[in-house]
View 1 (tube, one colour):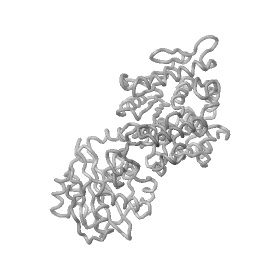
View 2 (cartoon, rainbow, N blue to C red):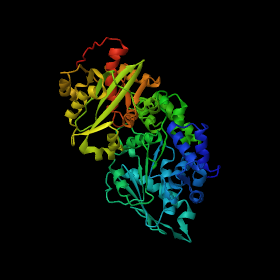
View 3 (cartoon, one colour):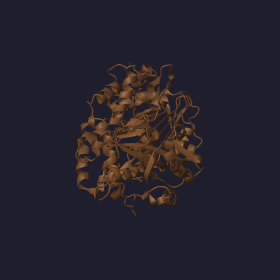
View 4 (tube, one colour):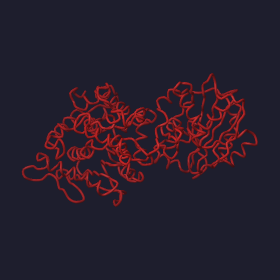
Length: 564
């Protein structure tokens, strides 16, 4: 066990025991850290010899500037930094102490939390700890950000004579394009997305900075593809929030959340996600915990806390600075109109059951037919004793499975095996397969279809075929129509009056789902602002709309078709 006075252990312990305010995903990651440190994990442990090495190095590394200039990095490193360093560099396999556990390390943190110097420290540690001829890369959206990382490394090295110089000989060669540690000939290269080619690199370790500003995941995936033969490969993904959900960082964060929630099984991912818990977002300008959740350094340095309070006061008073404050200092995506997660995935997962006996039930179908090259879904719902019962199936283009697996980080082949996803068509979804699937539902499940709800967009032709046998209802995809079923489903989940057949893909869709409000505060799920695929949830809400109209509103089966 790592000794209890270790700074990483103390911070993690204080977080888990609520002595330090922290968001739920940081608590989960800290708990995992403590389990390993306390010897409770049968597969992994903390390499105490490596911890001592890191502590020794940090004691002779000097902070070059800022509030703590002249202090050793050992002294001035904050709790989260210690957990980050020790986790990614010292957590190893019990049966192979040379093999590190984590291959991806994600740090989501607000500005002014020593992010740049955390990066610089990691690279200096790598110079001293990794094998000879290692290659390290940092990737940033542009040249200025790339230079910031390199400059921070240079400044730290030059401020640390016990590291930088030995017997009047410099241990490091610092050139325009790279930094080399002469003893091992290991090199660090700063790259920027706008001008650097990423292909063909063979990084032992790479760090992608300000990933929220990258236009696509190309840089990250190129780095990862060059690590196939590396024993201790590591990719660090670091960023603050940006005012959009559609960026590679949100994809990485979304995947990390699914790992921490137990939806995805991936033991190679480590994540410290300093973003405020959902229930705090509505109080973003009034609740101090919003700042505490996103600014761990401010809890240790009073000057930073005081500065944040001043910035918040200005953001409240001046609309033009509000977006920057909320995104960069609170880690909240702010786009004017309110946008938030639909529901806590843990609430959804508490409603999971192994199977539902559908025989003899009256059911309502909701359909989401997207563009033919995207995901589609069919949802089936029924009611029993004021509960909503549900099963949902997704449809994807068979010829794009590998592409979708890579970029969405979802193992669609596994979901195909469980029959919660059907691959059809080549590069586009074959609507005929979906149409036939609907026609087979009554025989397959021994149910009676009461109505089929659909969005006119892309579904009109299919609906015309279904209406020869069933009642079809066009559901306008607008807030005034969808607010009510969106609210009903949300409440049923919270009240544990929702049951769905075990379906990890549906859970991922729920976790991706983001809501927005219209001017009348009607809440509905928006695909444009959602973090990944939400087609299964959209189809489910369409089905709930029909169920609500017929059962919960007691309309005796009478529907008014909504015409755009």
